[in-house]
Length: 74
Image 1 (spheres, rainbow, N blue to C red):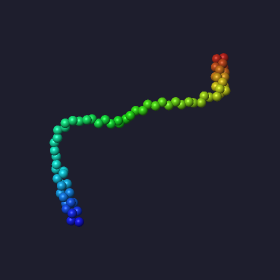
Image 2: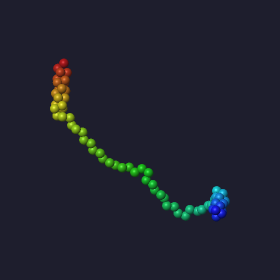
Image 3: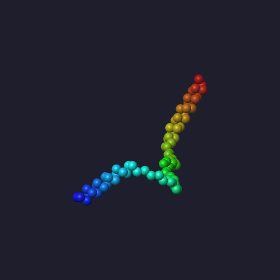
Image 4: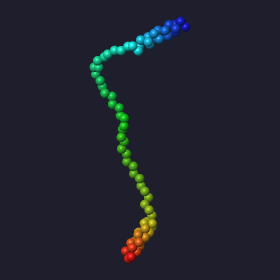
């Protein structure tokens, strides 16, 4: 128990001096660190849509043709 008390007192006594320590140094060499922050990704997506049935297309074309004929005659 005595050893623990001695060690704790030594640790607490040295912690008070750590805040007062300052030093100067000369930088000899620096190697830059590169970090990839944003890595763009290119991707392709293809989607297919179902074509309308042929008979509906034919009905729409006939309706459009009859409207043009009616409006053209008027």
